[in-house]
Image (cartoon, rainbow, N blue to C red; front, side, top):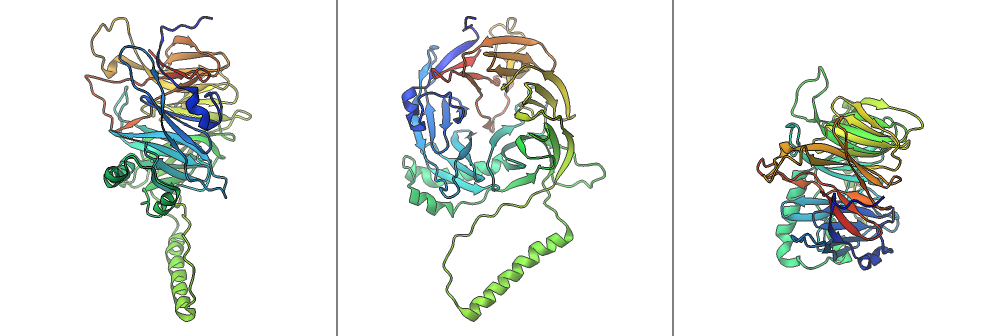
Length: 451
């Protein structure tokens, strides 16, 4: 079948010589982590991160990628720590790289290679960093919030986007005039790690139905019935895993525990502190200064809502729509389930898509009759792009129950990518930028856009 080029536009080429630091000259290595942003691609193996950039060309020709920076995170050799998750964080003019490690650390690097922030989320391998917000919904208005979600097996954590933005603004204000083009040495990195302020976050244990392989916070939900109203927010979380294909939880910001636990958490540390101080006065033995080990934050309350177990089916990947009201879930039996995250009901099912990858995309409802006017958000319809690598195609299906509107052949080893969510982005009625999907040919390094 000949490739139809009228649905894609070439925008850039990734040079193979820039990938030599990763131990390969092609992007078809399944162990590589990719994170895409506008005119930039971050690539990581287990220990090195490369950031490639290219210029956008208005004449329709594809740009040539160039190496922007090479980052070597300061990882623990004792714990065999490695990079396990990669994502962009974009705040207006600030763009940084967010990294999750196999030991549960959340790192943030500038595009000059400086370590901006390091924080322990929870001991365990970070599976995914999910960046999203709800202020670009194309179907209905929802409560607006922006967040960075950290997924660890059986654990889910949430950082508020405004808290991360404040840390980034403070760092850039303090360092851009002095160290803008300078890379931190290893010694400087280690010395600065102790001075990092802790970004407030919430963490929940969602392993009620087994350890999860992927999870997402889908949005804000009402509190339980007969519960007193308070200022605390409640979130809905959807998890997928090997034991339970789909699980759902109501997450509370409240970390309240039992009365006895509250007493112990306050009295026991104070008692030990008093005993230690008293023993120092008696013995006056000098103690070597030792850097305190970071401790994980206690869990907030997570109430299980529902669970779907269908052995031997196992959940594999989860993709959220821009509003968070729909989730596409792939499983080990080659099925794709479309989940309504508010009703927690599967509303659509596709079969025969093994090893599939899904991304939500926005397409014009009636492209032929639009003419040359500027499009607004109501002109676009939410669709699901399904990449079936065994079939060598990408299919575009209209949501929720619409038909398949497009089938695009793609070379073997291709990947589908999407720009990261941009914090602070607002939906303008006069100029709306739809959610797009990009194709990366892992063999040739050619990057193209679905048009």
